Image 1 (cartoon, rainbow, N blue to C red):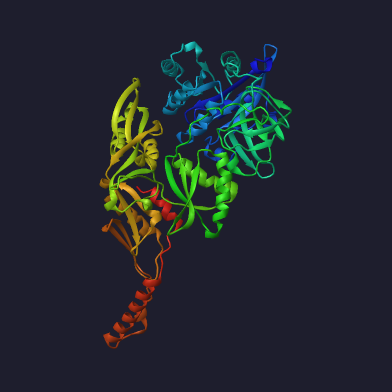
Image 2 (spheres, helix red, strand yellow):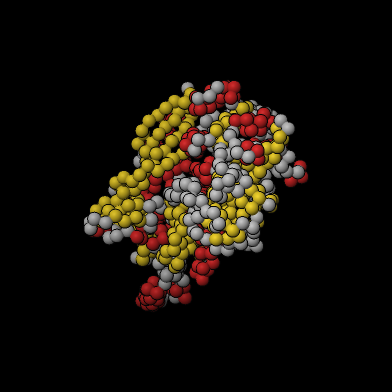
Length: 599
């Protein structure tokens, strides 16, 4: 191992939402003088406006710091990661590119669900874990109690837990020394053929696609002829360099380092996150087994607001996918909305963020249909179909049975909210598997429940029931048989396919009733009555009517015979009847989004 390689440390910061990862990253950047004072701002790595507005990290961010320790210069590559469960794929990619992790725990809130799930991921990758207790300057901090929780979780001594305040900077300096002493230098052979793992990429309209990588073996120089292992495409390394706050070009990068490569790639499909970069002259034998393929949990249709912008939307999604590898899409069409794409997301927040980013970064306005999960349908012919969209369901007579995805959900909460949370999980068809008291007043509940039940409003309800104190994490455990029916929404007898859903038999009537009431408020009045119906197969289970807008045709009759009024009304009735036959009902975008917020 070369001297330089021995002085590199790659580490990430993992924690639950809002435990102070980005603020701690700020302090590390300040201490290592990576940024000039004038460039310093709060959450400096969260460079998206959306991240600053919502106060969450959406992307993991890599940055290199230089630090003098015992007269030697060390290069620290830090990756700040998101905490929200919807962005867990970003975390898994960061963990695959590191040798160590700072596990940050809030001293006032203690160990939470994501803390545990991120920790298990890091342990699976054999990372060196440094426990850090943050926010010790707060009045509500309970350092002793939380230190015990962390020690029980990691099996370490209380002296090994670093107590810091990322806001004031207290206790952060010893942490830098600990990173150098405890986290191992990257392994790998500098003389072996080049093997570099792509862990992220971004589209730049001037330079083409910029890929971020970590060198596992070998080294790379500017101007080298390289190829991407899985796609087999060859390029010249026009520019390579390290990731400071801005891209900082260098002549060469050695084993263990994290950097970027620009080689004038224009087509997004050629860069796959998780691919391996190697030399054309002396290629490596096999690709790095990096990360597992992402499995979307939630599917929704995305359609351009103007139908003629379909091709624009396709190019936009291609560029967007570079920067968000957990987002997947494929073309589809709908009767109501024309041509669009079926997109896969990791959760409802992910869907909301993608929609917002498409609008801000690419000025692309899209209509999103009601999200749903994917089901396995077993037909009477013995086939198994994967159905992401209720309109893809075979006729009821051909269906043997349907299976839906189940998850293992882990909720950590204060004991005072134990009852309401249990009721919430039972209402969502959950079954309690186990419960475990972490301390006298905190309990961990493990449930098995259908994924479709937590997709819409479970997280919001959990937060409001527990006043924000409960934390939630889940992973998919497989498929189980379920009594599901397809609920269609009919407008004047025509099915609105973008509003149809697959739903459990027991909830179908209530849900159908609610949707009809909601749509009655949202669909504007027409010149004719609009019947809104919820139907299962050919059976109507709920109905509302949007009353027509009528002109008072009898206003000019005063006095005289009743037959004159009747004649005018009959004439109006004929006109309305003709209008209904040729009139169509436009469903506003607000109606699609309102279905999600039914309550």
